[in-house]
Length: 345
Image (cartoon, rainbow, N blue to C red):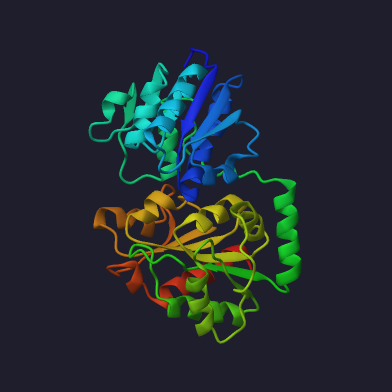
């Protein structure tokens, strides 16, 4: 694109994991438009991921249930910024309308029913393709590297210090993080299965750390109660940036899909993640043996690339299970052993 861009806005309102999946957009925008001011619009809780980002000029926030007057004031404020480009990876009704009201001459989002009229460019969602690559396609620029998808999650010195204090207090051996607190059927795996994995890791000399966020302590405690070996579950709740830094001090992670998994990706922590069907393709890094998957049954047309180790597919095991709940302990443990072999642990 020959036209210069003075001001650009990325709109990703919610979900910690989804916000991390959108951070490659900022890196690519900075490469394309080195002099541009790049802003981000999100809900307040998600600012923890963005507040230390060196390439962001400002962060605008919109409360989750903003009343009409507050929504209108935000729209007016965005309009006064005179953005040249809006990039909307979330493509919700409210984000589509906000982008349109901003008056930006270039507005891109995904092709969704009735929302197309609010954008100057819409991109079809490809099936299957890794989500971070999908979002980079919104830039509609041949110079964009669709494989440059690592997450940027910058933290402050206070977050690093808090993580160091946490590790010094609780970690007395190599740590295997375990996150199994999601009850949604597409992300649910029985607590007794997580505890079996935790015991096997403990037998190899790891301290199982049962990761939990706000409201998830009881789910983590249920796993801990079934373990035969000691595990770390009773600790003060930590912020998301501190959690990311603590994960960077671990050896590996066994996890369901969710925000902590995305934080592990950002921290460079090797992972084994359980998925439901095609979600493995959308939400796991392709071609990376450090980030392995175990997934329930895929459509036959999608399973072969994974089994053949295709570079654009995630690395791991496609089971014959109908749901995540039915995935066996042995299938997950096989991927843990493969990960440890790859890492030479």
